[in-house]
Image 1 (cartoon, helix red, strand yellow):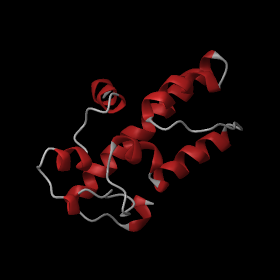
Image 2: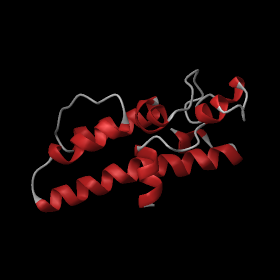
Image 3: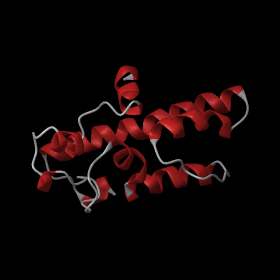
Amino acid sequence: MEISFWMVILNKINTRGVLVRRGILGINDAMCPLCMSTFVELVDHLTIHCHYRWSIWLKLIEWWGLSWCCPGNLSDLFKQWEFLVHGEFQRKVWSMLFFAIPWSTWILRNGSRHCILPSHIVH
């Protein structure tokens, strides 16, 4: 999981946008499978900016009683994430949550490529 996550942070995974750029998929196949919008599936859209993922990040921030301005990409979010909370235990939990959201998104995304998921799971 750690290697996969670092590949996500470095923007080195094969999203639909990357596969279109390489000529493997057509432009009509590039859209985000989670929100079914007109946004091309790129790492930052899939992990942060997709409105379903964004709502998860916002709920997490609200639960911890924090306020913030989300950076434009996952790498910058990772750099600022650990400074949002204080205390050793809180940082461990906080770090786990940071990794869990993109990881679960990637698992969900890969599942949605192979079957149609019920809307209550995707949302």
